[in-house]
Amino acid sequence: MKLSEIDATLREIRVSPVKTLGQNFLHDQNLARWIVDRAELTPEDYVVEIGPGLGALTQFALDSGALVLAIEKDRRLADFLCKRFTTDRFEILHADALDFDLRQLFAKPRVKLLGNLPYYISSQLLLKFTKYPSPISLWLLMLQKEMARRISASPGTSDYGALTLIVQLHYRVEYLRTVPASVFLPQPDVDSAFVRISPRAPDELPDYDAETFSRMVRRGFSQRRKQLRNLLREEVPNWKEAASVIGFDPRARAEELALKQWIALSNRTRSADLSVATQAGLERLPVVDDQDRLLGDAPRAEVHGNNLRHRAVHILVFNQLGELFLQKRSRWKDRHSRLWDSSAAGHVDAGEDYDVAANRELSEELGVAANLTRVAKLSASEKTGQEFIWLYQARHDGPFELARSEIECGEFFPTDVVSDWVKARPDDFAPGFVECWQVFGPGPSDVEALVPSA
Ligand code: SAM
Image (cartoon, rainbow, N blue to C red; front, side, top):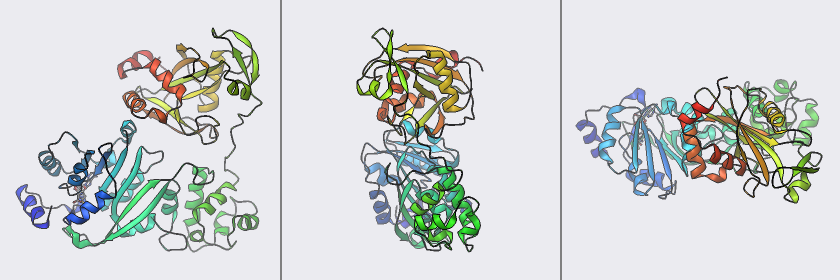
């Protein structure tokens, strides 16, 4: 919309822009088109737009053929957009974007986030919508210039800080352009900037322990002018040696260390847990025939290398809402690393039976005990990696103590989201889970019936 059209529309729908809702409407059509072009949208994309306002960006996103879900807090604007865009590729949600349940987006094929964010909550929105792991593949955001500079900053600059590193640990941030206040009606008090955020490639950075990293970074930047050795000496034994190996001045301040140096430093702390899973050749697994009768046992590598039939357990843990806990396998797993999987799963060891293995896996991987109920047995096949699998279910609300070497993170998901997600993006999952979920195949009400009370 041009300036005159925005003016006329606001009068027609009797809306005067609300400052406390950050209502500054973009009237530069060329800029709006340029912003949406940066998303390289196709009809395969699912766009989530935060704060569509009068639809300045929405219009161009819809022109691409993509599906658009727009989240608008102001009912008057939501009603207006509902009338303005009548295509069934457009959905308007009258809601506060801070309350939006992101988990539903995992079930969408390819999600891109677009928004000229309301500035009064832009940092909260940014942190919420970039929380790792994220179902979003690209973020295109208009922010206050100051915030855009902070998240895209380079080492040695005054904008470089804890927020920079916490965002950049998972994402690449590009500051694409500064946007003057004059392209908005009404004009905001500050200039804006447009950034593009994209996920880092899986092996782009060395291994790190995210919790230790962010604790170190926050502490390091808590007093910017202080030398790091005075803030972190307790955490890092032998500070001088660490500085020399990592390649920074032992008297450096927080802003002088680049992302990879921060990772290296946090890996030298006493608490960093980078223990690679001890899943190598020592483990012996039972080898079975096509009826699951025991033939003997063999080292794990031989079992997998020769495609021998063996045994495994999968446990599906549901909370009181009937949501399923999924784990994301760690980067250190030699098979299916970084894929989503059953709540807990693992091999039956030599000399062990299925029930014992299931209880052991639940305790080792999630750090809890629970009543386990057998659900079904899956035959060994190519799809299960030649594993006979006993599938169990349990009820537990967490919290869990995740085995960090095995599991990167985990989360409860509504079962309909899981079903849609498996359908839309089966490659996000370890194949054994896909097989188990097909057998389990619940609708939400079935889960309630199946899950035993705690
Ligand atoms: N995208 C439009 C544009 O470029 O012209 C409007 C951008 S304006 C800066 C921010 C929009 O976010 C407004 O429409 C405002 O009503 C909406 N908004 C404010 N707070 C919100 C919230 N918590 N959740 C969703 N939308 C919100």
